[in-house]
Structures are given as structure tokens and as C-alpha cells.
Amino acid sequence: MPEPTPSPSRPHPRWRFWVLLALAVGGFNALLAIGTWTWWTWDHLPAVRALEDWHPEQPLRIYAANGRLLQAMGPQIRFALPLAKIPQDLQQAFIAAENGQFYSHNPLYYPVSYPGILRAAFVDIVHMAPVQGASTIAEQVARNFYLSPKKTIARKVAEILLAYKLADHLTRAQILDLYLNKIYLGQGAYGVEAAARTYYGKDVGQLTLAQAATLAGLPAAPSYFNPVKNPQLARERRDYVLHRMFADHDITHHAMILAEAQPIRTRYHAPANNIAPYATEWIRKWLVKRFGASFTYRRGLRVYTTISPRDQRAADHSLAVGLENYAMGLDSLDPKTWRGPIAQLKGAALKTALAGGRPSVLPDRDPANLRWGVVVQSSPGEARVRLEGHRSVILNRADIAWVHLSPEGPQANAVNQILKPGDLIWLRHYVAATNAGSGNRIWGATAVWQRVHDAGWQLAVVPKVQGALVSLDAHTGAILALSGGFSYKLSHFDRALYAYRQPGSGFKPFVYAAAMDAPALKAAGVRHDLTPVSLIKDTPLTVPLPDGSDYRPTNYSNAFSRTPIPVWQDLADSH
Image 1: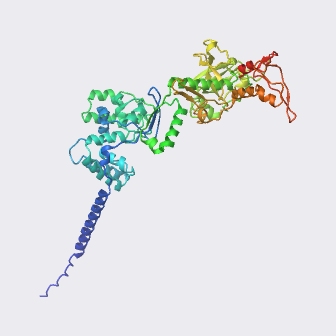
Image 2 (image 1 turned 135 degrees about the vertical axis):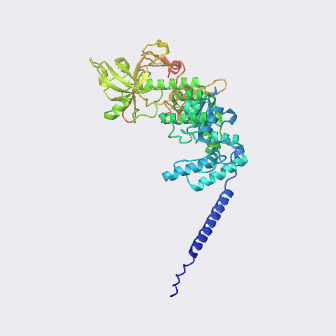
Image 3 (image 1 turned 180 degrees about the horizontal axis):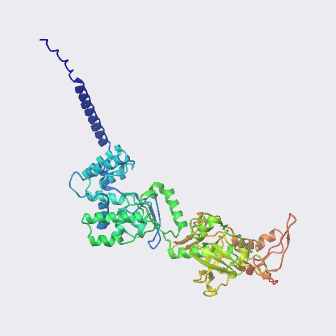
């Protein structure tokens, strides 16, 4: 019987061993590398003890004499508050929106939420992009103070490690305090107090529950959930925050329903309504020159001035009206000419302006007390003007009477000769001299003008002539008002401080004194010297000039009395 043929022996699977060994070595090296890199990252993280005594950058603030904020200037608008002054509802709203387990003692949730990281990682893998974050409040504080917002693995690891450092050195109350005063909430507002003033014009202590929840919804995406630009999205985010607060037992179901029923009503509120821009700009320049820009804008300087808001408004109004009157020939005998409309609008630009859209040829804001309008229709007797796209006003012949086109004829100063449909023009409320009686449209030279209520509108122009006004307290020298020009919006140049003065009538006493200096004149051989009672003829005079032309001096009114006037009276009446 033949012997069976032995089957070939199967080779020992040694390659599997080597593969497993290589994987084990590679895994060990990878873990070693990751551990080394993590240790290096931890060792190079910044110290966080400084945050125990953190003083945020705050802008320069300038106040009026009555304590009113005139202007806040700086790279960040911030009003830091201690946590004790931030309402509990507002604190709970931010915790519910950003880190519901903030007060948890479970190491899986504080200071880092590992379930949140896994959930965000799953979403990012599904979308193949970093679309969802999972940062707790401690992590956000670490990122806002020390790291960049760039979404990378390295930054996330550093953020997690810093969160543990913060938790080791600071209490949760301290971390929440830092968060609520540091977080960016859109429109240049950093911190909850700045956001409350920016969106609602009130302090955090005055916010309703619905408003607090709206602000708490902003950190996720300040631009996207902006309640002014995107009220519907802001409402949805606010309602989500309210539901989270109810789920966390921070509010009752009834309070949640009432808050959800509130409409989103917000608008931007400037940090301050600066009624004295020339004065505050002068102060700003002085501070920067003396202390430097960084110290001036970031150290929270507070400057208290002697500016009186009431006096400043009166000064600005008086100066603007006086310059307008001069440009319109109402306070001056100098002939004035109509320079025409600001622009002639047509097509889409006209349609937009009639609907209220501000024409691009205008400054960002209306200067002084002027308002813009667009002529819709015009006839010989009147013109209909759309005032800033919101209302219609009628201008008749009396309202444009200062414009002189033709001295005579039945169509002299016909309205449609001056105003055409599509003309972009300036208008102002009627003003009248206080001694002319309320509602009277009589014009005349005067130093005091007041707006006449319900007296209609008048065609106006931006004056080319400029002026300045400074009001002082005669007893203390305090500056109560300072106006450096017709409108700070049109020109920032401060003529009250930096313009060269025209001599005006200031030279006249020197001329008269020289003319009456009898000893000096006699010594020079002049026999006809003057005395204070010497008479001078008030008649037309012609003086030949070396170039062959004649100089004919006149009075301001171009009138002569034909009666000799003594020198002292000439000087006294000169103006």
C-alpha cells in the first residue's frame, strides 16, 4: 500500500506578528508624541492668576457739567460691572444658552463638557467642516482672553487645558464675571452692560426677561442673531434661550409664555449723543498729546467739563441760524445769489429719495437745523416737496422770497423758476426775530432768532461763510459752550480755537488815535490835525490810486447823511 503523500506544511504567519508589532510601536510613538505635545502645550500656556485682578480696557468718557455723557471714545465700548450688579435673570439666561451644566460638579461637564465635544465632533464629521462648537463658559473665557478664534485642533486643545487652569485658580463666580464683562455681543459692544445700552438704551438692571434672553442669544453668532438686522432670527434664538431657562428651572412656565409674547423691539443707541463735538475733540487731542493714544483710549479716563448742554444748544442754534440768514441775505444788506439745488435727481435715484432713501450726495447726517427734501411738483405759485421721504410740505413765494431772480414783472420770483421737479434742496423751519412777534415772518437785522413752531418750512442753503462762538462764565472763566463752525458734520476744523481772526473794527481806534496825535502830526509838518470834536463830512468821496483807478469808500448801507459828524461820534457809531 503506497504511503500517503504528506501535505505541504503551511508557513507560520510571522508577518502578522510584525504588523501587530509595528502597529503597537506606532501607536505607542503616537501616544508618546501626543503626550509630549500636550505636556509642552500645557507648559507654555499663559498664567491665569492675573485674571484674579483683571481690569478691562475701557474707553475715554467725556461728561458735561450736569453729568451727562457727551462722548465715549475707544476701540471697545465697555462698561464693566461686578457680578453682584448683574441681574440673576441675565446671568441664568447666558448660562442656559451657553453652558447649562456650568454649576455641575460632574467632571464630564465642568470645566469642559466632553459629551458636548463628542456631539460637536459627530456633527463636524457629518458636515466635513467645523460647523458646531462645544465650548463651555470656562473655555470661552480662556479663548477670549488668551487664544485666537481660529478653529483648529491645536487651538481647541489649548482651550481645554486653559479651562482647567482657570478652574484651578478661579471660582465659578469669578469666571462668570469675566465672561459677562468680556464677551462680544455685536455692534462694538463688549460685555452685557454695553450691549444693554447699545440695543435697548438702558442699564442691565432695567432689562426685561425677554430682553435678557435676547442678549443671551447673541454670543453664538452676534451678526446672525442681531435683533436689529435680523429680528425673526433673534426671536427664534431668544425663545430657545427661554425654553432652556424653563428646562433648567430658572423661570416658571408662565414667565416663559409672557416673555415669548414680547415683540423684538430694538434699535441702535449711540454710546452718547455728543452735543459739543468741537469741545470734546479739543479735549481728545490734548489728552492724546499729553498721555498718548493707548492710555487715553484704554484706561477708562473720565473727563468732566464745564459745558452746559442748554447753553451749547443755544450757541449752536444761534450760530447756525445767523450764518444761514447771512447766506440768505436776511441779516445782511450784501446781495446774495441762489446757487441752485444740491443736485438734480432722476430715475432710480429719484425714486429711492422719494421713498426715504438718503441720496449719496448728502453728508451722512443733516447739518445744523437743515433737512433735505426733493421737489415733486412746482408751479408759479408753489412747489410740493417730499421732506426726507416721510411727509409732503408746500413752499410758496413767501417761503423762497429771499431768492431774487428778477426785480420786476408778473412772474418775478415765480416758484417754478427756482425749483424744478427732481431738485434736491435744503429746508429749515421758519425762524423769526424775538422782537417781531410769534409767528411773524418779518425778517430784519437782529442778534436773536427763535424757531417759530408750526410756521412751516423755508428754502435754505448751507452757508459758505463760517463763524465761531465761545460762551464764558464771566465770574469763573468756565467755558459754557463752544461752537467752532456751522456744522461739525460738514467740517471738523475748529474756528473758535484755530482760525486766524479778521481784524474787523479792531484797527479803528489805532487809526483814529494816530489822526488825533497832534504833537506828532505838527512835528511832521501837518497843520490840519484832528480833535475829538473835529467835523468830518458824511458825503461821497473819491480817492485817486497810483494805478489810475479810484477808491470810493462807502457806508455799509450805501447811504450818506450829508451832515458833518464829529470824530468822536464817527468812532462811536462805527461798526
